[in-house]
Image 1 (spheres, helix red, strand yellow):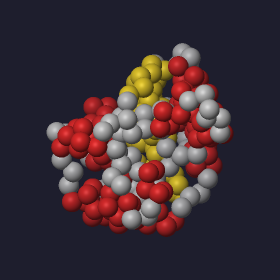
Image 2 (image 1 turned 60 degrees about the horizontal axis):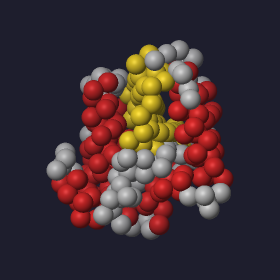
Image 3 (image 1 turned 90 degrees about the vertical axis):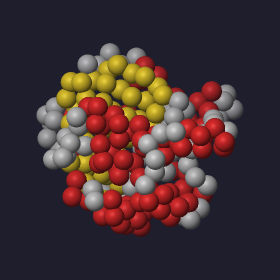
Image 4 (image 1 turned 45 degrees about the vertical axis):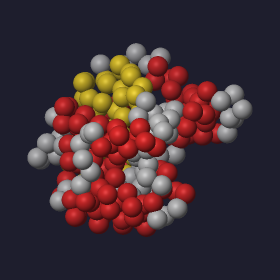
Length: 218
């Protein structure tokens, strides 16, 4: 039940993870605890995606970051580890049960002092932030029809050269499946087209996890 890039065979996925930054005890335990939740565990990002996000945060020299959709906290843990020493990550979620698991992991990992969790509608939280270009990094991994709204609120507050990361942009391959016509799939397709055509950002879609888009503000 370990999360992985959906298009990779199990053996190749293991090889990929084993030849990157090794997982520590906190990460392994968090993956295992999340797996025990059952089918919903698929919402946890792949380990290799987490390692990439840590590296991106470090390369950006990120100090101010926002995450929309925290679940059990693996992605937040990875982002927080990549922040500058005085960095701050604001996490937006609505589920107290799942984020309680996240809080415990953050404490064990020694990054809880870098993370602020706000429970409630993420759009309300984002709209309460200053309307200045003060963010270095954003990550969107929440309800798919609201992706455009989260993106616009983050982009407004992102500094030039800052990055928005967007998860699930390949949606298990359903973006190319003509038979898939559910609201989430339609939303992902429309959002991907919007980013492709958005002149405000440079965009690359990376085949990691369930597809990760990296959008850099010009």
